[in-house]
Image (tube, rainbow, N blue to C red; front, side):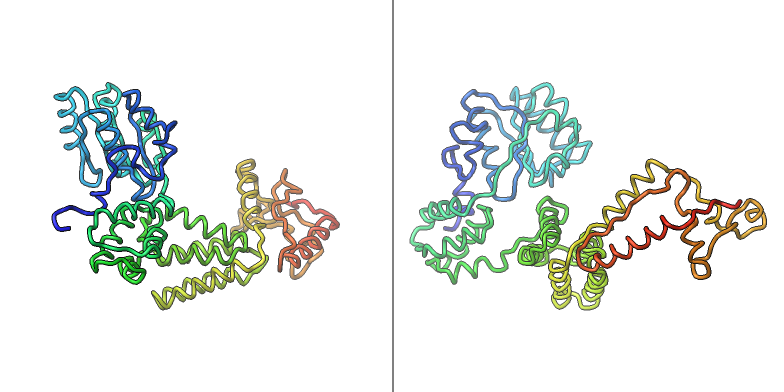
Length: 420
């Protein structure tokens, strides 16, 4: 196998018919197949996870049209390489420019492409693992079409691994080992083939050799990437829905995948305040303590504190009354941004402020409860404003009863006006 190149490169499809798992793009009615049949290719972006075939599709499109093709990686390329591609396109009368990881091009670099896309000199085929809605500038997006490339299904990867054995002469493989590789690759063809190639060094691919090849396969996360934020969102929503098993799964995906544990800890604190709230006031304390415990212990010992917090939050009663009340307060502020504070609530540290009536007639709660309940607290025009409403979940049942009694007492008290 020496000198033959990586297995993933040798297995790269030579036609659209060999592409696995992307029927929505290359099937009989797929848009990419229709482009080739019509001999037309617009500028476009293929977006999807690593190892799903974006580079292969770009090459097949260029080759299928017989157009000159140039491959650049935005990690290494800059304006100089773009100018060279433009010069080559002028000499050839046109060029398909495949720009891998296009999301890494900055605004100036993206803008440099615009006139050449507009003139038709360059046909851009971009590839990205990120959401192009966020990664690309509006002017560039307006000149492109977007096509999602899906992660390969386990059965697609199993078929690919079986196909790969023909390129590994003398190597035998257990079906269970191939299925293990297909499952563990998580939709990434390159990862599956690399693991197979490593596992095949012994001459026979067994489940044991497959596991050794896979090693700690859980992928390192791009902390600014879509997958990272999707996993964080899934963790948050699983805890909110009290699904403890899903919460633990996504927590493991994050922590074992390389996410910053302190970022996860801060998210757990947010969940405690937003989704548990006063339904269990201990939740916030535990979440904060879990972060402090991780800071004290580090990994891996401190991760168990985050596990404890995640499980506690998932099992805790839920109430978003604090979150909802804060949103209402923000809306009230937008509607009344400068409502004057009632005079009796204002501070009066100087003689002038006292002369203006600041603090006059204020009823101190601990000395005059009746007067305290009778005086106004909201600015004039906002009387009767209701922002906080407690639910019946957990401790909030007691909060709701307390709130009901307090509001009844405010309503029944004889109102007082500012004496100033």
